Image 1 (cartoon, helix red, strand yellow):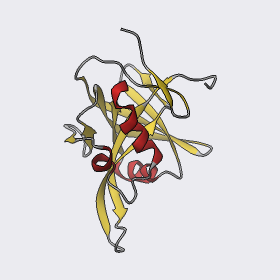
Image 2 (cartoon, one colour):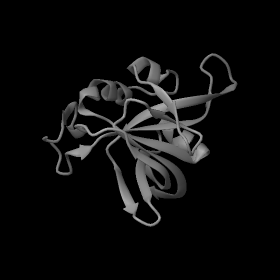
Image 3 (spheres, one colour):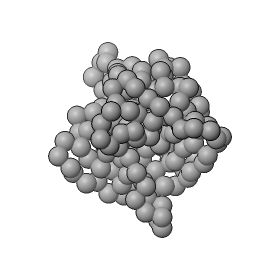
Length: 165
């Protein structure tokens, strides 16, 4: 376990243009990726930040679309979350492959994860370059806790934990 763990693991959903793997044309692509580096940064306005590696496929999608959704996942779905964290969405549909359901966001042009316990929809307001990552600071346009549950926390590697009842 690292000194900064455990941290709550989230699935971030994003949408943007990507190159089709069978041709050179651009297609609209929905993607999911796993993050532990995230935080609320302001109450008023309600701001939320995520830190995304510059080499990641989702980095380019968020940079272009300027929106993303944060999906707070339950511990029982850790294997599906791990699946999304181990593969690039550039040439696969992670929603389909992981067995997760897309749900259209209400305030942004993006999708969410239907199985999430809670979500926030975000519009990027600022980008901060931090070495090999970019911190996307976003205004929260909608938030909802759909149901209480045991959320997923990362201990390091393939190890996770959750909260007590």
